[in-house]
Image (cartoon, rainbow, N blue to C red; front, side):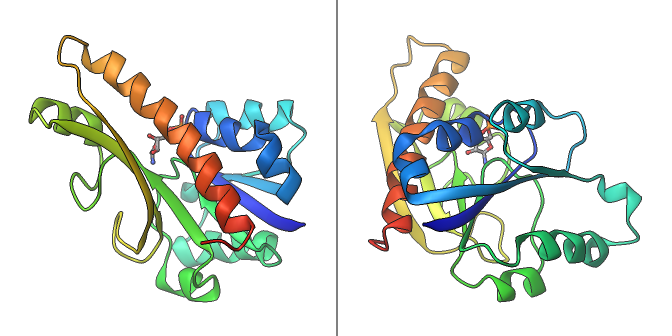
Length: 187
Ligand code: GRF
């Protein structure tokens, strides 16, 4: 059994998808959910699943090194960290300690549309396909080796909201599938 942590900042639908998945639960213990936004919806989702949460406010710390030190203390035994809408860049130091063990999901077909509002930008650009990428994390925003992608052809009779929901469904499915492969050592 592997031991994993999930880092999130917001709603936590990807957190919920992973934490509810029988496939993931059979392969790993979700040891901790780390959140940098007190009050975020994901915190209640962790509580409902009896998953320990470490919630911190970066403003309460002198600098990034100070809060990352505290996070590291809590995650040092983990096999993998899955970022699920964690809106903070991990430092070089942190990533060096977790080389090849930090994975992220991003709602675009990387390398296109890095950063925020990726779905909106792809939709407004009239992209034929919109999709999702799972990748290893390095210091570059939404950089790092790509592990998996999935996409669908955009139906422009649908609103942006509808397309966003469609992207999130793809995300949840792909994160479970790829997460499972990683935990089984297939990736
Ligand atoms: C997802 O679209 C994820 O790809 C991105 O942030 C969003 C988080 O959504 N990195 P949620 O909190 O998992 O619902």
